[in-house]
Every structure is written in C-alpha cells, then in structure tokens.
Image (cartoon, rainbow, N blue to C red; front, top):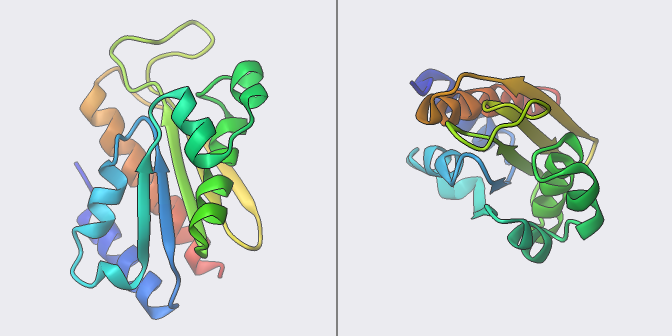
Length: 160
C-alpha cells in the first residue's frame, strides 16, 4: 500500500523549495511517476518520467554506458546511479530518481534474488543509491519500492 501522507509531504516540499524532478524507472514501470503526478499541482515540480525497462532503453534514453550494464547488470548499484544521473542531466532538473530491480516472481538468481531493488537519487550536491530486498510478490515489491523511493526523496529534499 502506498503511503499517501508521505506522498503529499514530498509533493508539498518539492513545491515549497521550488525543486524539479524527473524519474527513470525500470522495475516500478512508471508507478513512481504516476504517484508523483496524482497530486494536484504536480506540474510545478514534475518534469518527466521515462520507463527504461530494457537494457537498450537505458543506454539510448539515459546514456548509460553499455559496459556498465554488461559488467554490473541492469539491476545494480552502478546502473541505478547512472540512471538517476542520466535522467537528471537529460531533463535539466534539480533531482533525478531511478528504480531498478527484480519485481518477480520470476527472474531472480542466487546472486540477485527476486525483490532485489536499487533506488538512486541524483542532485547537484551528490548521487546516492540504496539497496533493498523485498518479498516475492510483484505488486508489493513495486509499491514498497515506491514508498522507499519517496522516503529517499524526502530525505534529499530535506537536506537541500
């Protein structure tokens, strides 16, 4: 379940601080952008969102080096970092946020299990990535990823 109170807090703080944001999503499939734009007045802060589900879309739309995906994988700290930086730079926004992971219930391995998620946040000050492991339920993984992304985003906005 999405934390509506958290979503409203993030929206209000983005507006209050006059910050702009863009999303680059893989495992959440656009859910984060959907949530951020469900708030009235979101056009004040939301620039764009892209769903870069395939490796080629990450390369073409976000400028992620092929080597990063080849060497580290699409689901990795390095890719989440590159996605957040790529969307921030290509969108000319204050904050770029990314999600990449294995939503499940298939696709996991011993090294990268179902529910493994990386969330990246890029600002002019720095870029940070957080790693999570959730359950094997696809919808819950997507929702939990979005809730954690909103918490991460709130932390970045608060430190602005």
